[in-house]
Amino acid sequence: MMFILALILFLGGLFLFAVAFMVTSFQGVIFALGIIAVCLAMALPMFRSAR
Image (cartoon, rainbow, N blue to C red; front, top):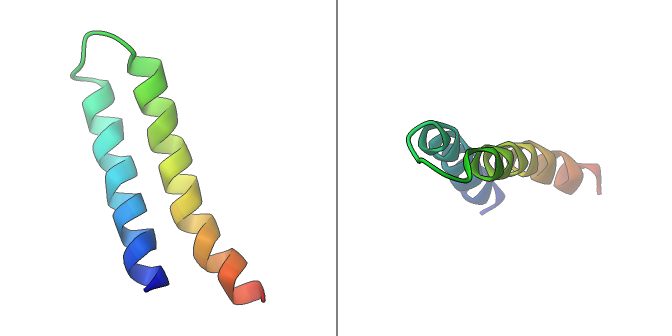
């Protein structure tokens, strides 16, 4: 289950990276949300395996 959640977050973050260059406003916010999503996708499995 954690793998699926991390995969969805990772792919969603990559999608937000791409969308940030296509929209006309809030590019920085969308790009930052993409960075946060990718960071969470990497952090969740590492945090989960540390327990």
